[in-house]
Image (cartoon, rainbow, N blue to C red; front, top):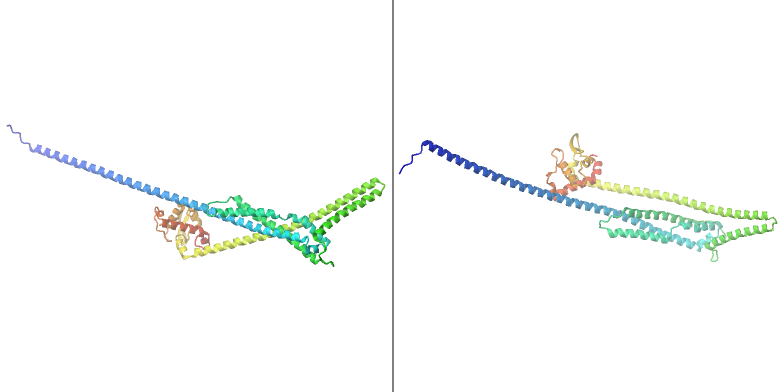
Length: 438
């Protein structure tokens, strides 16, 4: 059998180089595959982290939306409660005024009715001039007094409004503005009518007092003429006198042979009677005008006193509220919560940026508002946190909060909200106390 020739050293070196190159190529391929696997694993990990961040952001947005809706509902209920309380105050004021008006109207009517036949009325009937004044009172002035039936209708309307509000307490019911205005008008009108009734009662009392002052030798007895009968008798006598005058003058005219003179006399008598009637009407009108002027003056004085009393009451309430706010602002725990804003420092807020000033001062309440840190929104809370955590402020205590994730913890969120509420509530007082700049 033929023997193959032995390989040369050159051939052996070429074979060894080929094996090494093949091994290196295999190692390189494994490294590339390993790199691709590692890159794929890294990309998947990054994708998973991104999805987790997106889920966290979505959860945070949902939470913020829930808080916003809860805050809006709370504000709506607070507005509704304030409107209900305002209407309830107006309705109760109207009810009280109308109840007083009804009682005073009944007293006026009872007194006027009693005077027609009681001893005081008989005493008035002893003086002709007082009889005339009483006649004007009954026939003219008393007609301006409100009717009891009308007052009862208005009282029931005011009570209806009051009960309507009471039945809606605790709900989001917000009364219409015209309902509040209606209750306010009912109270004001009732007070005006009370002024009229008070004047009429005063007039009636003055009439009785005048009858006791005037002197007469006659004595009041069971047979004395009542005021009602005296008024009727006076009216009857005036009518009879007028008729008799006309009759007498007419009879005298008939005796005159001159028809022209007779007709002229009749016209003269008629004109005199007309002038007399007009004079009487003018006297009544003047008396009524004088009474209206007195009533208007009394109303003006009463309204002025009421306005002054209301202004004084509001000032006292405002001062009491300011004292309470000063006391609250002076509490150590409140000042500790507000220290990041009230502590003097050179770091200040101006507009939408931070600046340095030469002298140390507290932060400005107006500038905090202008920065958007006080309006109650989630964004304003974030702005407040930015101010209280800024590393540029080296003079004031700092909140140690994470600017991105501080709102994830409910206790942190409540702390920031409480601080913002304190700044809104106590801002003017803190400025007055020099704990905040204006």
